[in-house]
Image (cartoon, rainbow, N blue to C red; front, side):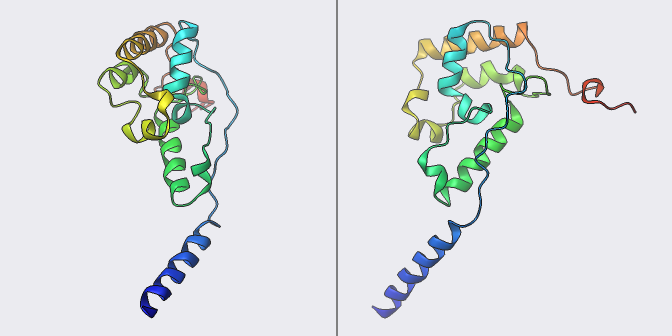
Length: 155
C-alpha cells in the first residue's frame, strides 16, 4: 500500500513538473493567404484544415496540459511545415496532394476529428472541399521551392 501511495505522489509530482515545460502556441502572422476559388471552399477548409495547416490555429484547452500540449504543438508544427494556407508566398510542397488527401480520408486525421466534430465532413462536403482545393491550387499555385529566386538568394 505504501508503495502505491509513493508511486501516486511521484506521478503527481512529475505531472506537475512537466506542466512547466514551455510549449509554443503562437500563431505567426498571415503573410499571404491562398486565393480561394470560392468562399465555400475556404469555409470547409477552415472547419477541417486550418487548425493544423494555417497560422489561424484555435488552440483548445488541451493545448495547455502536458503531455497533450506537446502532441498538439508537434501536429501543428508538422502540419504548417507540410502545407500552410497562411503562407502561400512560401513553398508548400504538399499543395498538389491536398485533394487526394481529402478524398482518400487521410485528412483530416482521425485523432483530430475525435476532438473536433465540426471537422467531420459529409461525403458531399468532402467532395466539394477536394474539388474546391484542386481548383484553388490550380488557379493560385504556391511559389516553387526550386530556383530560390523569391527568397533573396543571389548565389
